Length: 273
Ligand SMILES: Cc1cc2nc3c(=O)[nH]c(=O)nc-3n(C[C@H](O)[C@H](O)[C@H](O)COP(=O)(O)O)c2cc1C
Ligand code: SF4
Ligand code: SF4
Image (cartoon, rainbow, N blue to C red; front, top):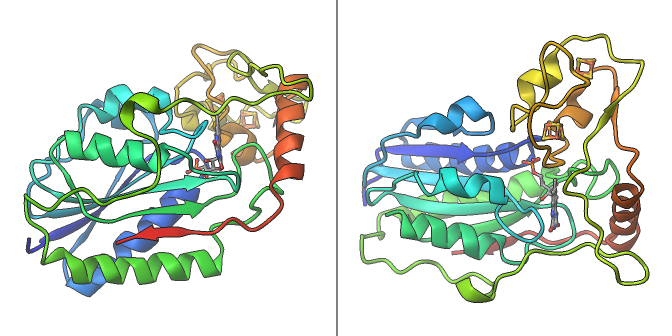
């Protein structure tokens, strides 16, 4: 293919996926001397549509890893995004534990939808639950790797055809994939599905959290009230200018500290080309 455009397309609640995908796509666009386009589908209104991709597009496509998979709330939307032969590079981020089956799942989704996923990557992002787990990542070293990877995919793009096989990445087959299950010390499952952040006295009702909730679940008239599900994405907690959003659920807090204690080592970036 002769790429005429490079896209940074991503879902990113706390901006780590956005930063990685943009760094990769920016370098690829520069190396190919073509325009860089962006499609951010983090907010509900952006999931009403998608770009009209063609075989002239090279799409760097990113989501975080949630419970070892592509966030399941995105699956319905992702099934509607058609590639029409566009070359694609699935990119996942993960919060220092593991990406498990998220990259292979994203590759399969893209391939099923008419994209040609010829390269892939898993980068590390500060964990949505924490400010110490993979703190500050992607950092300068990660972003250098992202830029280098962008140049490499650009160099490879000319060889890509409709018959190019999907890139091989680690992970289980479609029928074997499960979701990562947090457990307590006794081995019992911790169920955080119903957990939602609380709002402290520090809130000055600026309304920002209602605007940036990817599920559109915070009532703009009363930011203490939920109008839909919470996926624990961390956007309202990390982006509140007053630090007013917090969790007090014991299961959630236990799981967060287990992750912080258990995954202190620096997890590596994985590139597939
Ligand atoms: C509900 C949920 C589940 C997560 N599951 C995992 C996981 O299985 N493994 C992991 O390493 N990180 C996990 N993370 C962390 C995110 O993948 C990571 O912080 C990512 O960089 C967030 O991307 P964003 O900044 O683009 O929102 C999870 C985060 C959330 C909110
Ligand atoms: S972003 Fe923070 S201060 Fe603003 S309304 Fe939400 S909780 Fe309140
Ligand atoms: S309410 Fe839940 S889903 Fe919405 S921004 Fe906050 S953590 Fe994310």
